[in-house]
Image (tube, rainbow, N blue to C red; front, side, top):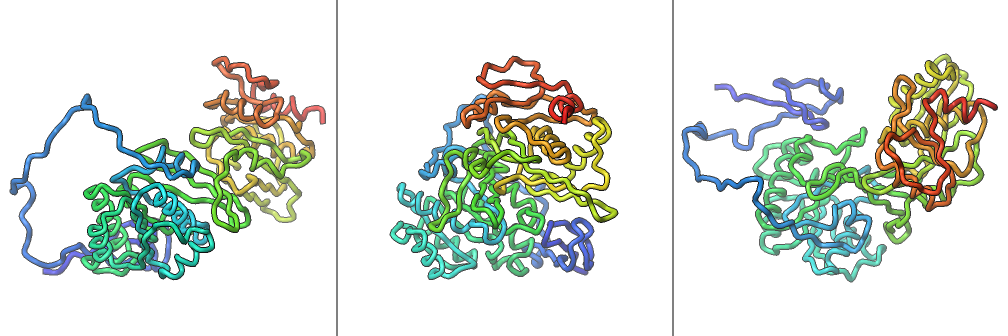
Length: 455
């Protein structure tokens, strides 16, 4: 009887019954590989329905379970993203671009946890022990009680972890792990899925925490099947631009704390230093206000954060004007341009538009709509907004301005940094006095007329 074959894409994990040169799901070339089952031989197994197993204990929703114990690292930005510290019997997945500083961050975290009494093992599948020790000396961590190993064989790693019984194990990276019971090359979908499952199960069974580093694709998502992100308890992304010293550790999934929380770090010659006041740092290089420059009052996770949004509008020498965006969604920029043109009569036809979020920060919340629109109109009209103004609000397709959450926290952060006025949508709920001069345009057209009508 012929063996049933299944093929998977190494980029997105999509499955197909036959091999092809291009993946139909993600359009990547030469990424389809054979995905065999863990056991391809032996007698046919009986169905689970015909076999009796043990009865599992049941409970109800009212049962009170103790909160899982946590260990603080002493790095406030890291503990914030983890939801209050490291949790036992948990699995974490950390992704980021090559060279962004993932290994540096985890080595510093390992040293901090080890100094706080945890038994930590750092296993690298990409570097030798000498290379890790060299980085530790550069960071001043060579005396930290962290155990090192350089290995890719998953069976040997699990045997060592079972013998040593650490509190925390760091695996760098999951794509280099090789499980000898899976008939495929390291880095394949089968290997990544099997390795992540074995490590996660081992962590839960032995009451330890495991941190796995994951490579990312060119689109910025963690490589391999998405099922890996579903297996683990916490998924963190380490973000930043190579040309900037700032790094953002962002939580996109956390079963033990809030998601979308961020920690801000600064890359220095001695490693990553935490940033206590990100708003002040992102605005530190802001000089005299220029056309196209607007300060946005945002919320990242649970903390308010102010940053500068910059826009440049110039005549286009091409028949198809450029739309270039860094740090924001390009599709949402197209929507804001369309609303400005159709609802406010501000045309951008024949103009190149460039939008940038200063400092390498990436903004995802819709509350930045009004700040982006203000930056675009300011750049087009060559008129700067007041230096003491902060802007935030969501724009609908009708041109209406919608209120956003945590308005009071945004205003308090602006006042703390010396801003004296704010431009926000009208709130149905009364906002407590913040000491700022507030302006509430009725809609986007009213905002454009009020701010730039006399130019």
